[in-house]
Image 1 (cartoon, helix red, strand yellow):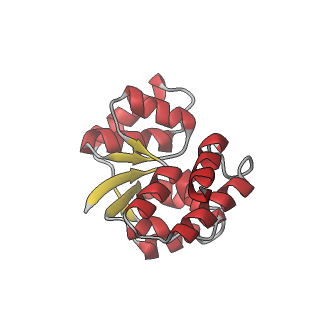
Image 2 (image 1 turned 90 degrees about the vertical axis):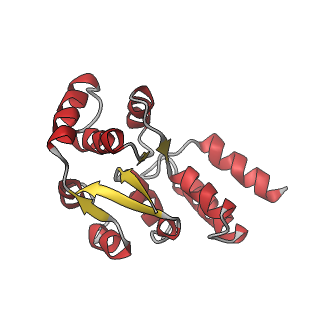
Length: 167
């Protein structure tokens, strides 16, 4: 099993399409700072408890991660403290960062951290045959339907995947 440092917005995407359990089918252990789990995953109510039941692991940051997160907040002013903590965990532990947040993805790239998001998780689920093609299409189409509100994904990437599956 591979560890992944998780941001919160991915879970909101999967909650919006009522498929919160899907990422947990992949051979990953999702880590999130314990304070972020309690403070950031507030909507919809009970989401943090569901994620813990599904397998999200709360983790404590090390001193090294804490100090790096502080430096990252100064370097990337658009990022929240919890964004910087997720990035620090990924960088120090040399693991993937799970996020769909544009500024956080950009910072991760600059920091040499590999990033995956909602669409990448769905692609892996399909490619690894963890979900059927019909479920994949449902997920992409539903994300597209909610896009622009709580879901903020690149519309062109969603449409491209739908077209590809319809061919």
